[in-house]
Amino acid sequence: MNIAYIPSPSRGVLYLGPVPLRAYAFCIIIGVVVAVWLGSKRWVARGGAKHTVGDIAVWAVPFGLVGGRLYHVITDHQLYFGDGRNPWNAFKIWEGGLGIWGAIALGAVGAWIGARRRGVPLPPWADALAPGIALAQACGRWGNWFNQELYGKATTLPWGLEIDKTLPDGEVVHGVYHPTFLYESLWCVGVALLVIWADRRFTLGHGRAFALYVAAYTVGRFWIEALRIDEAHRFFGLRLNDWTAIVVFLGAVAYLVIVGKKRPGREDPDSIDPVSRDERAAAAAAAAAEGPADEADGTDRAPGTDAADVADVIDEADRTGRAEEGPGAADAAAEAHRAEPKKTP
Image (cartoon, rainbow, N blue to C red):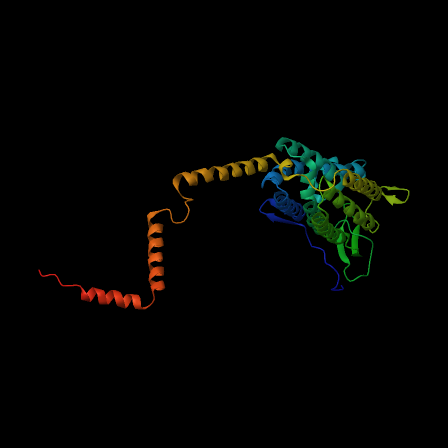
């Protein structure tokens, strides 16, 4: 064994009594938490309310999980249906098998429902969440590492991934392969940083930050797919995911160009979230009401208008006048006092 190779975990599940704790599920949960956390910070910075991203994510995440699983089962139906296959395995999501294309597509439907219920337009919400989604994918790919799946071709590179497992059909896989899960994870981190930078540099809005995320991700997915050796449908020499990446990339680029020309810049903060708009209006009204109240109770009086201030002014004037009379003034006053006749009791 070459110690430079990346080892694979011996197992991807721990048991807390009878309850299984699956690393694949934890990676997905961590990704969701990261996406909602970063998305919320970006949404508030855009002028939205603090809890809006999380409230909409309650709809988007379940839809996304179902969509991701449906895409995988439909495109790899031979793994679950046919002679010797168990259709119930299609529900075993913890064993891996989520297609990002289905997750984004059906997740967008869930997000649209949640956004509509909150009165929030979907494009600015998607812009705020875009880099968080990329980071969620980066976290989720480590679930493939725990499951020893989605690795690439055999390699002798020092960062190769050691695989040692037995497939369901009894075939034993042992060797060193390209860690495509790691390539995609790092690529997604780069996509997140790109979107954050471009959003600040070019003030992206109206869904363009999300479109940039989609376009950048598909570029990486295209070349990573070329390294994978897992079973996949092929058309004209390319894997199905390659064709999907090409189509989605062209659509994202077209959206970037067209919307960039028609609606440059970013949305008005008051137009993206009615909750935050109402909060700002209430705060402004409260601030305006405090002004007249302060004038009524005298808290905003001008300096010198109460008795203490007047006394201070008089004392200061008296000290100033004595200083202007010169140092002899005090001596003259004392001499005049001694010259006064004493009164006889």
